[in-house]
Image 1: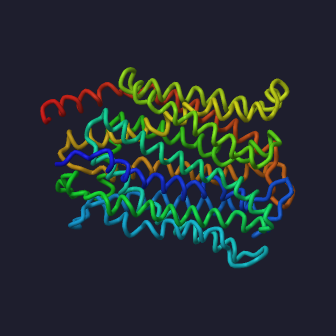
Image 2 (image 1 turned 45 degrees about the horizontal axis):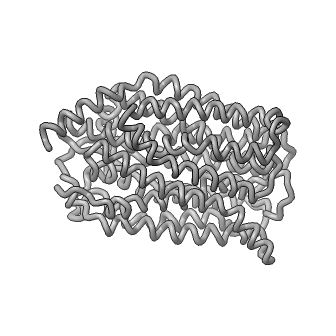
Image 3 (image 1 turned 90 degrees about the vertical axis):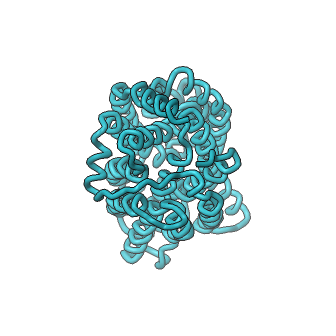
Length: 455
């Protein structure tokens, strides 16, 4: 099989550039678009009791998203297309992936209506389905084309670089909104216009790797015949996989709370303008990118597990500071606190964007070595299945928590926003304990021994 070149690695990683653009809109702006804040806004109220309605919609959507992961993984792992088991799914899913994300933000009734709730719920479910059809095969393809664990960290570094750049662009939505509103554009269209651009660019970026990467050149498609249930059981049978999966999903519960409420932290708790959301994002991305070479060096020298533990401990400290934001603001002021958030979170973001994905790819390769079967799709599906089921709970809890103590409008409150930081802190602290039991050395020993015998 061919060794993938750096140019092809870049093309492959454009799928995560797409994920950052399209998925970032849903993660960062779904709630702020549909749940009004206490600040002045001209955004319409699309449905009554916005916080409760969005909790139900996101909960149902995320559950549907979770249960389709193993099904799509099974379809991909057993696919016999002459193009390969992964790229054929990516080609068909790329355009719907971007289009359905955009349609979420175009409810048909220009006012408060149950029709809007049904529309948003239906579009969100279809969006999650398109996302699964693209991202499960895409994640498996990444793990399969790179078999060198050391070079794999480089692949996921490029992956993360493109992802965080696209995520930063999404966070610039607040800046774009202010510029467009300053030109006389209504607030709702000042959001819809950048969303439209991001979805179009994201869909194109998602298509590129499915045409540039000739899957058969890099991946040996071994025979695979296993039911969804048997594949899930076999995948979860490895203790190290169970540990890293549980740790990952608990960590992402914390990240989901934080990412969902991040805009609120800046604009509500710190009482800063929308522009500061962009400033914090730019600081964290710029500093984080500068630390990428350090992540690669430390991954080789100290291993992946110690880095993951250190990043999560840093998150605990940061979330604690946000929960006690009044104390910090009294000490250094709101703007300084915002800058500090961007600086402190930068290196941990670099680590948690690169290392976990590399670990799951290591585990998929470990499984292939032991069993002789290539079922990378099911490995990533099993991870996502557990992760998304927990995120469904977060989707409900975070939406309700943001509106804690609100009046009938379901507006986000300062106390509710503050509580999300506390929940995030607790969950990321739990992930530290779980990650401590992961045996990284045993996995790498098997892979290195196999690579030595099969150069």
